[in-house]
Amino acid sequence: MNKKIKIVLINPSSFKEERYGRELKKFGATSEPLGLAYLAANLEKHNHDVSILDSIALDLSIKETVQRVSNENPDLIGLTILTPMYSAVKKTAILLKQALPKTKIILGGAHATALPKETLLDISSVDYICIGEGENTIVNLANHLSQNKNISQVNGLAYRKQNNEIAFTDKQDFEKNLDEFPPPARHLLPMDRYQLTISRVESAGYCPTMILARGCPFNCSFCSHPFGRSFRHHSVERILGELKDLIDNYQINQVNFEADTLTANKDFLVSLCRGLIKSGLNKKIKWTCESRVDTVDKESLKAMKRAGCWEISYGVESGVKKLLNIVDKNITLKQIENIFKITKKTGIVIRGFFMLGLPSETIEESWQTINFAKKLDPLWAQFTVTIPYPGTPLFENLKNQNKIRHFDWDAYNTWGGWSGKDIPFIPENRTAQELKKLQKQAVVSFYLRPKTFFKFLRQINSFRALRAYWSGFLVLVKTKIKKI
Image 1 (cartoon, one colour):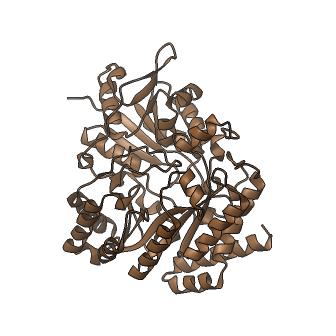
Image 2 (spheres, one colour):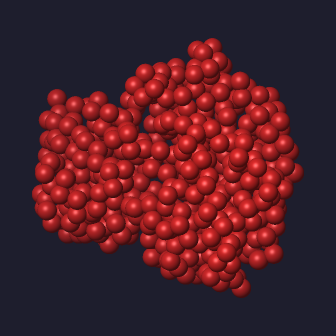
Image 3 (cartoon, helix red, strand yellow):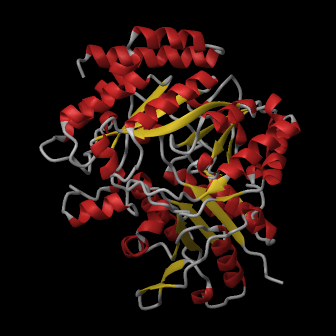
C-alpha cells in the first residue's frame, strides 16, 4: 500500500480587474476550478491527504496564498496555469519554493501543457510539468514520491534532472472511461463564493458547472485541444447521479453543462436528453451549454428544450466566410443563420461568440462581423480580440511567420480592449489602438439598440439581474459618451 503524502492544489491569485479590466471586472465570473477538484477527488480515491486553495474565490494575494500553504507544509504543491496568469503563477512558485524548499512543485493546465520545456527553463522553482490530462499523472506522481521511487516512470511529466537538463517521460494516454474518475471534490471548495456571469444564469441562485465530456473532434485553429480530439463523455447514469447530488447538497435549480462541444456526439446527446426527461430532472433543473451550428438540427434542439435546456452558446466567430475558412471553422453563414432561427423558434436563448482581429481581417471585415451579429440578434453577444494562445495551430502559424508581436503572456487576454496591455497579434495594416477601440464599439453598438434594451427589460427576473443590467447599461453609456 502506498504511503499517504500531503498535497495542496492551488488556483493561483488572479483578480477580476486583471482579467476583465477595471470597467468590466464587476461582470466577470468566479467559476469552480473543476480541473483541480477532479485531481483532488482522484487523489482522495487513492488515499492521499489533499486540499484545494482557491485564491481567486477567496480574494487572496500571492503573499497570503503562500502563507496559507506554508502553514500546511505539504509534500507536493500543484498549481494550475492559464496563459494570462503566467506572472502570478511564476511569482507564487518562487515564493513557495523559498518558504518550502523541500516541497515539490508541479504545474498543470493549458499553458504548461503547450510549453512544458520553456516553462521549466523559465521558472526554476518548479520541479515538474504535468502534460495533458492530469488525474492519473498526479496520482502516479504522488505514489512515486511517497515511496521515493524514480519519477521517470511516471507518464505525462516533464521534469528537471539533477544536472538541470529537461527530460520527458512517456506520454500519458487519455482516460477512455471518464467514469473511472470520481466526481469532483466540491467539498474542498468554498462553494458559497462562486457565480457565473449573468448571461449564463436563468434565475437567481447558485448555478454550478458540471463537466460532462472532454475532447473535441473539430479543427478550429484557435483551440489547443488539451483533452484531445476524441469526444469522451461520462455515462448518463453518472451525470444524473452527480446532478442529483448537486440538487441535494446545494439546492440548485440550474446548471451549466460543460464540454468543448456538448452536441458533438448525437447518440450521447439523445441519451442525455432521454435520461433527464425520464428521471424528471428536466422539471427541476434548467441548463445551458456550448455548441456548434453544424452539430444540431430542429429535432435535437426540440429534445434539448424538453430536457431542460434554456440557453445555448454558439461559436460564430466571424461574419466573413473567408475568415471562417482561415481558422478552419468549416461552417457557412447560411448554416449559422438557419440554426439561429430554429433555436429561437424552439424557445432556447442564444449567446453568440464573435472574434475580432482574425488573420488578414480588414476593418471593413470586422464591421461585417459586428453587423452580422446584429442581424443574427442573439440575446447575448461576446466580442473578443483574437489571441494566438500557445498550443494552438494559430499560435504556431503566426509564430512561424514572425507575426506575433511579443510573448508577454500576461497580455494574452481576449478582453484587451478594456485592459492597458499590448495586444500580441494585430492583422496587417491594423493597429492595437484601433482593435481595442473596435472591441468597445462592437459591444456598445450591439447592446445600445432599442430592441435590445426592451428585450433585457423582459428578461429581468431577480434583483441580481436588475442590478447587473443597470450596471452594464451605465458602463455602455459611459463608454459611448467617451466616444471610445
